[in-house]
Length: 388
Image (cartoon, rainbow, N blue to C red):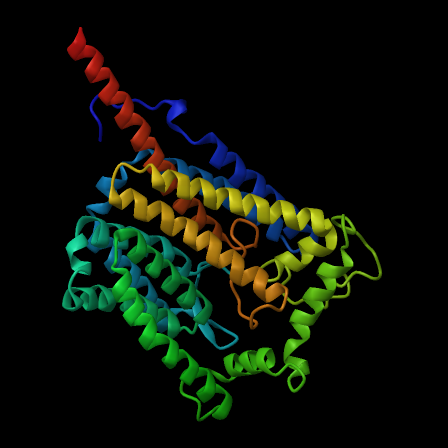
């Protein structure tokens, strides 16, 4: 903490908070329209209130003090992911949730994103020499791989891919050698091509890389004509987005030609919320949502560029990476640009775990800016005192 620390509103990035709140408000409105009478909207409003309080608390706690708990953070992350595999609720073949009540569940992998950002911020920000030698670099990879493997086992391939992208971002920001990046790509690209060939050639149950439902989704993407029934959800999503035209059909509409009203999009309040936004808010609404997500990511990057240390820089850029990759995957699935996989649209999709985790991450970004502003003012005051 800084000497004579006092909370001052001018330290706070009000612009970022407004972007996040407006986007969440749009999400709450669309959730209510996507699943009227199901209670999801009221739960999301309660989740917003709790998330905002958590964000504020995280914002005013010095992130450098939080990073002192790095091994505790890592242990909690790995522990949660391990325990959920043993005692979690199985839904449609995936064990990703702890059931708290009949209507409320907690998804540890959502919080793992933020916890691993903190761990990487300490590991790479405080120990940059780890990336200079292959031996110590592989130690970093091993520590990072343990939670990712646990997420794969749930199974949750989309979150694993997302976190791999965030890890690469952390490496890049921490100064990982371009030459080493090139060597890794030279190895990984052929392996990726080989994996795609293997997936197409070996169907389940002999396929050791993918579960049957994952295999079907990938094959439906690669060979759409042969897997028409597997693409139905995405086809309906594209139809809904296209039917919204410029301004949409309006929230809470009772139009008989609505794709949503025909119950043609399962769980529309979560992974396919963008389809509902496209149908009911139209092209204009979609642009506003994407624009707000872009503005939030840019604010994170600007804060990272001005961070007082490498730890803060990694936190901010990794948070921007989460927003970018998660948005790209969610909208890519809703528009058939990517294979069907479940991942929420940040701040918009229904999900209390996702909402709390994302607001916690924004709290960390606000924290970095808060510390930077407070530190600059403290230095300025000391300078004035010395001159006097």
